[in-house]
Image (tube, rainbow, N blue to C red):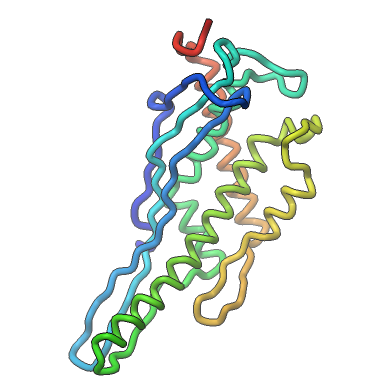
Length: 228
């Protein structure tokens, strides 16, 4: 399976503290990392290599600027700061989907396999393997990382953007983020952008996750540690 390990953090394990200057800020520790399995063939036949992708969320932490800020609202958005931040958590967790990641990769034709010929020089062979796998791994890592950033901005800040809140990326900037998403084929160097259908699916799944996060915040009490 090209998309190998996928994991996320449950809402109940999100930490909430006071600190920073933003009303609320969600920091997520996410690993988007490709790794290559090398299979040595018979003598003189070289190596068959397979790239695999891991997507692991290991932590979500929310910081508020002051005690009580979590439960405040603004004229730009009806949900509370806490609900907004949990919407980020839910949106990011939604991307930790083996099916969605696999579909996004399939859409642009991610190259998962490559072959390295044996030259007879062990040092040269090792260099060829390492250089090639780095190129293949980086291509899929960069592609998925750009999608993560785009979806988080596109989905969670939509209401704030519609209200023209200062500090939120505008429609033109979000469109530029989408236009910049592409997979660079490690064999040809050609860039392949995801099609509109698969990105629409990704947006929908992210919206669903975002709503789950917001609803979790609505249905749970704000921790006493961040209240006056």
